[in-house]
Image: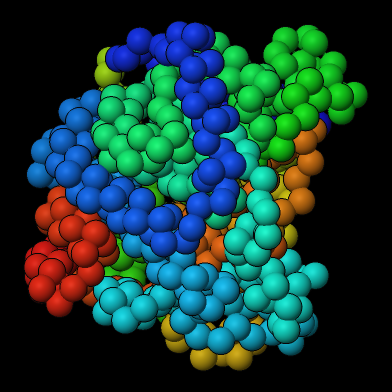
Amino acid sequence: MTQVAAEVHGSVAIPEAKHRIAPTSQSRLDEALAILEDHKNEWAALDIDERIDLLEKLRTGMVDVAEAWVEASVRAKGMTAGSAEEGEEWMAGPASVLRNVTLLIASLRDIRDYGVPQLPRPAYARPDGQVVAPVLPSNGWDGVLFQGFSAEVWMDPSVKLEQLEANQASFYKQKSPKGKVALVLGAGNVASIGPMDALYKLFVEGQVTILKMNPVNEYLGPFIDQAFGAFVERGFFQVVYGGAAEGDYLCNHALVEEIHVTGSDKTHDAIVFGVGEDGQRRKAAKQPRNSKRLTCELGNVSPVIIVPGPWSQKDLDFHGINIASSLCNNSGFNCSATRVVVQHEQWDKRDAFIASLQQAFRNANDRKPYYPGSKERHETFVRHHPDADQFGATGEGHVPWTLIHHLDPNDADEICFNMESWCGQTSEVALPADSVVDYIEKAVAFCNERIWGTLNASIIVHPKSMKDSAVADAVERAIANLRYGSVALNHWAGINYAMVTTTWGAFPGHTIDDIRSGQGVVHNTYMFDKPQKSVLRGPFRVFPKPAWFVTNKNAAEIGREMTYFNADPSLMRLPGLLWASLRG
């Protein structure tokens, strides 16, 4: 690897944000961990019905704080109340947490009654023997709300179909489970990540949990603390504050037995190997200073493969908005944001699709770059590509939507392939191929071998193209061969995050000295022990307008209605949610 590529490989190191809440003192951190230590075995042995009762109290607590939670997020991120941005905060905040809670309650009831969570439809084996478990729609409500969508979790090839139940909910099969104290280092971008990571540690892995808030969104800590009040009272959960110093203290604390972090590969390496020259030496020698079990989700340069076909102008415009929305969401501060659009060089609509994407960015509202260092990261990409298209306001306090297109696929040093920008930037590249099938195969190889990360990828293909059996077979092979933890057909793979029945995490196999997008998964409410990837499938075009589209003018109401529906799925709440969706 050249020096240029070495400088731009991986996710980015992000400056620490200014604190809104004072860092927790070391004495208080010690006290919080001591409380968890004293109650970890009680939690491990807790009766299923008591666990369900605690989740039901959490559900009530989340509803109680939801409005104030979203108001605080909108204010801190400089968003406009009532806008699509507010809708994002509902959907990626309380709505997602409440969906997680409700699905966990269902899984625990299944464990109590049947031994393991029950699948909505029987699992099956692909022709090569790989086991596939349907997980969406998970119930009748999903069938109404996500019409045309389905999702599966594909297992590690070592899992046999007749052994699937033996590879579910392993914690609940232990006769005398040993309690553990887990540390969750919360993410600063998406409000639901911290609490949902904690829920995974608590209910899938059976560990009491201390959640250290990220300085970027630590203002949410008091709401999480209140919502989880029943867990705090029993000594099963604690919320603390601070930056890198407090995180380092906790990671190396004698009472912390396992760690989960959502962040960057730089954060992972600092935890495992340390920083500076000593950290670099340790990494090169594969000599960790911290050998505790560590699971992590660490970012991605997320690709979308566009399969050429008989696209109309409406198709081009729909998916221009689809891809733009996946970047504009949360101001571009998502590890699932589209960073590379892959096209067929010979497709006669390549430039027309770029034009639709440009128009979508041109129409998108400006967003506040609330994450530290975003202006500098944007400038780095523009310095590499001074001809980049930039849309929206520029200057102090602004980072324009940025599209870099017609990249050279053979440039091993291309920053757009090697670094997650963590701002409102995306790119486009085209691959030469003799046929559509040849292109699909080359696009998969390009994503697997040339683009950094393994978290999520998408494929978009016209339904008429799928009527060609050779193309359909190539698409299915692509889904199977993409080495990503989440793959989506026709939509943003980030939707897998919000479905919760799906897994969320990197493709398995990374080592500590080359961690890339991480190791382990979260969400996974069917509690599979050995998942490989999640696959989401959806219609080529959707009506009504998807709630996550930046053009959805009713997203705030949809998000609010979805939050309360997820807390209490019922026929009484369904009409309000459907009506809000139709008016988007």
